Image 1: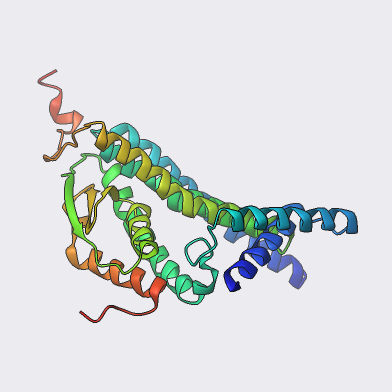
Image 2 (image 1 turned 180 degrees about the horizontal axis):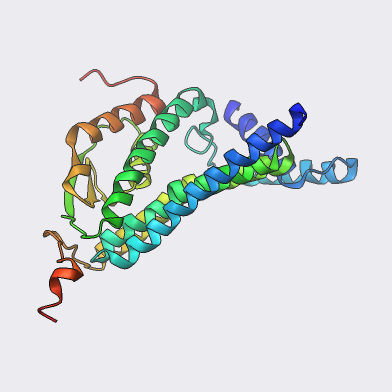
Length: 120
Length: 162
């Protein structure tokens, strides 16, 4: 193996690791949206998807692109996501608040399905 | 004037990054579109330090690097809360006092709160933000005060002597 091949291998490993971590965060965000109780708490789970999840995937794609114009474009995509996703989240939250959506403010702690079998 | 020049340079760089052309005809068309955009921006009188924040990059980049670390930490916290076999969350709506010298600083602070998973700015008021948090762990007053101070320093360079 030449030095170039080793560097490319390291780049691929780093890129795949970033992509896999990003996918874990995206998956956790989706699961959180399904599992959490009300509108505002679900929004927090969605936030995981569009901050660390999206950014890690964009970074792994930048590593795949190398020092090209494509990498610069991907960097721009990451930057715009970074700036616009909180603005969109705030717009949605603010609209819900003004429309009178009352956030759940008590403790939400459902029993484990295993312990619930008797009641159902 | 310096903001106008800065905006023109950034527009030209973005045009080139998105197109990647090197032919004279296409480059001159790009230059023409930058000129038209600049004329529109001047006519709309929107060229000031808020629309052209590129001269504060020296302080904005360290701020966003620090914020990136905070985002990663709270991402892991939200991940744990969402994936626990038994969900146990106590959502909170808190009022966070804001000490900012400019609208840009307030905007960056509100944006940073929303960007951090677990906290979302729901309403912007005159001297405070209404923030919704997933669990009480995210509503530490010290954490918000530190983020406010850092956002203010990053945009205005100094703190009010109060």
